[in-house]
Image (cartoon, rainbow, N blue to C red; front, side, top):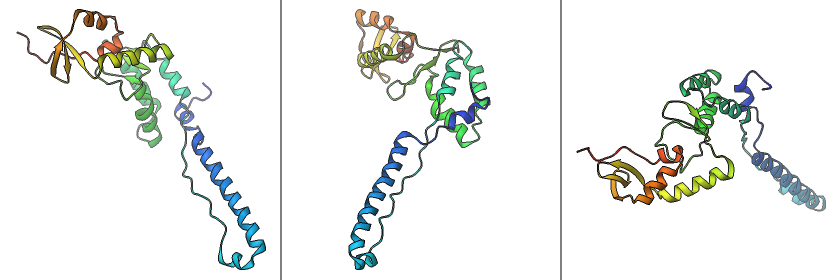
Length: 208
């Protein structure tokens, strides 16, 4: 790592690509309109008195975060207890500052699924914490992982399941839908722990 100050390295990314493009475009449009205005007023002095050059369009600043070093550091912590990794993460990035809180809360913690019931519908987890509190990385990555993820989401179709005193059942929230077939139970057993645990809940029915 090039710098010891990882928290400073992460936020020194400059303007985002889209923001840089908007800024260049606003200046280009302003220059083109100014040239056109100069051509007109050069021929018409009254127009020069009655008008003014076009003002540049305001483009607010939008910066990109240089997350590569921090993401590589987090990935290097795989197989370590999450409690220790979390403590070191907080020590490296001071959450009392706006920049530190942004990096920790909005980026790095969003990479880690810390609880089985956290949904994968709105968030892409690259790492997860297993039932023993150890930081893990999914076995599948890239396109294969995305294919598995889409297939799992489509199969669950917004449902969760639980092992009850009556066997495995489908639920929507805590409302029972139907008993799972043997084929569905075998399919559930064949899923990775990450996908299975994110959709298996404790039985809403009291044991008999």
